[in-house]
Amino acid sequence: MRAAVVTSFDSPPEYAEWPEPAASSDDSLVVDVLAAALHPRVRSQADGSHYTSTGDLPFVPGIDAVVRDASGRLRYALLHESELGTFAERTVVPREATVPLPDDIDVARVAAAMNPVMSSWVALRRRIAFQPGSRVLVLGATGNAGRLALQVARTLGASEVIAAGRDAHRTASLLGHGADTTIGFDELSRAADVDVVLDYVWGAPTERALVDVVTARSDRSRPLHWVEIGSVAGPTASIPSAAFRAARLDLVGSGIGSVSAPEFGAELPAIAEAVSRGTFDVEARPVPLSDITAVWAEDPGAAGRVVFVP
Image (cartoon, rainbow, N blue to C red; front, side):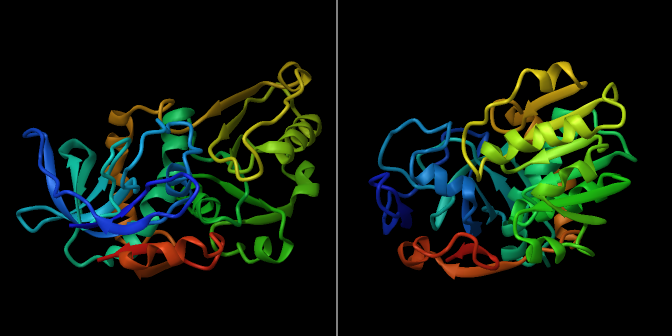
């Protein structure tokens, strides 16, 4: 069969031959891949920079997809680490890491939405005790996952959702797409009394944001749950110790490891149901998998998430 194959961490995947997959047990399924999205997580997997990387080559990237099983049933499948990912004509998936989908869905839109929706959904459901009525601030709201995090927070019961971004025009456009208020990174004191921060930025912006938010809180003894999800501005941040002493700050991360595979799997049915019924505003751009090398060089921030199709 044909697949996108990573042979070097310094070059894009190539469309090439790969051995046909076989199920290793009754707990796994050989499936046809109908749509698999190019998430930032997949780019870091393919260049070896993700914290789960083993350094082993070659492999087929891709962490999730809309697939069709041997009975003809549509499913969403989530993979963790495997040498055969979802950027292939066929792959093998754990049965418990799949969830059935309706037959009438737009497979590209569902593939584009599931991973970014999952990032904030799982953070709110599994990493903190999120309470309906909470006020939520999303740092890095202009990215695909950040924009969907606004909508996820609203869907899960947030009373107010605030979008923070560096590009004023793009941030302002989020009003009506999940955000009640939009602010720049130099205005975070306006959002100081939130209950939850979903952080897709990290790096130097988060260093400043933590100080700005903590020092401006009207009641520093009120719990502030800061959830680190992404690191588009850098992998490290220097956090002053006073931020923890001067406020009731709970700083946690959300991702593979801090959330177990069974926990991810437990959330899949509700996420898939919400995505399938069109709850979230998603832009998908279907692209033939054979074009992967050319598409890889495109700006990752271009409109619409790339979704590879057969």
